[in-house]
Amino acid sequence: MSKVLLIDDDTTVLGALQAVLKSKGYGVVTATNAAAGLAAASDGDFQVVVTDWKMPGTSGMEVIRTLRATRPRLPVILLTGQESPASV
Image 1 (cartoon, rainbow, N blue to C red):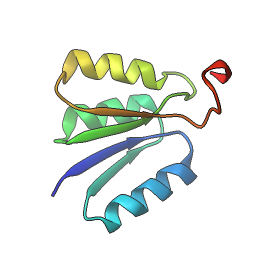
Image 2: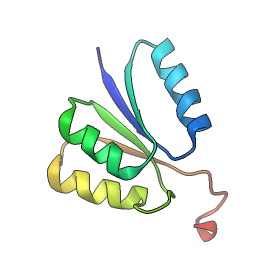
Image 3: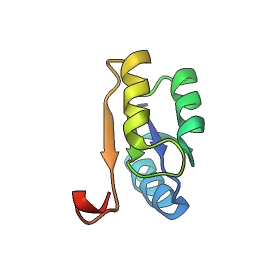
Image 4: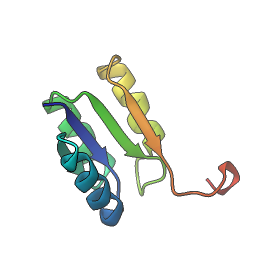
């Protein structure tokens, strides 16, 4: 089974993404902040990480930088709820 790591501080978004992915047969692990997500990424065998861009503390961009250094082949998808790049 393919495993997906979801990182987002919005639990509503996490729940919705988790429900959709599980209904499609994916194994899903969630984290509500970057630190927990990075810890899970270092411990788990994930095929992809989906992270929010804008989170309190460590941003999604920092998650990507850290994962590029530690797991360079792990695909990462960056999500944002911002309506435009100027909003970020």
